[in-house]
Image (tube, rainbow over all chains, first blue to last red):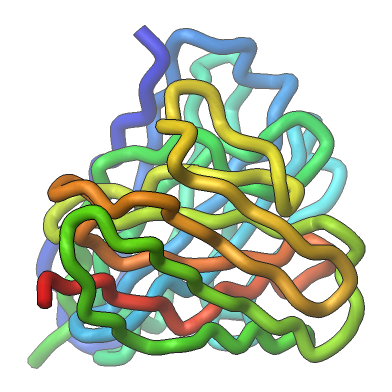
Length: 119
Length: 107
């Protein structure tokens, strides 16, 4: 089955860290860029980060640059998002999304994992 | 950064209505645009990619058009399962950006 399954979300205090994982199945993982997108409560979708299939570069939204790190392990069909120095405004559902071939448009999404940053 | 402006932010419609949502980019993005549907508690779903191509499995009542800076998503005959929030997204360059969303509600 073609799917993405996120894990690693939870409750963390401001300044803390979390590592999200996204396990992929049903497609040739290393051939596609992978991405993280979030939706904060009451707000719209916000792109967070992207990584191409061969990890030759990484891309970040300004709001997370220097605090979040995206990586992938093609041997395990998994993409990660290391989130450090978390802030209340990082509270959101975080979705893993697969890019289409050739474009950073997202044709497969996971169900999401909730990250809550609060004291 | 490329700003994506969607309108309207919400629309009240009835089953069978034709619904049109627009998305304007702050600079030209060729056809590097997608439309997504998101229902409460669910993940977004790709409807249209590269401005006018219907994603596999998406009903043909959905269509997209436009290029450059102005884009449109049309639902030709609204069905009960179409009440949701719709987003556009540009992939012309980083940072990738989404429109603010359009909520389609039951009149």
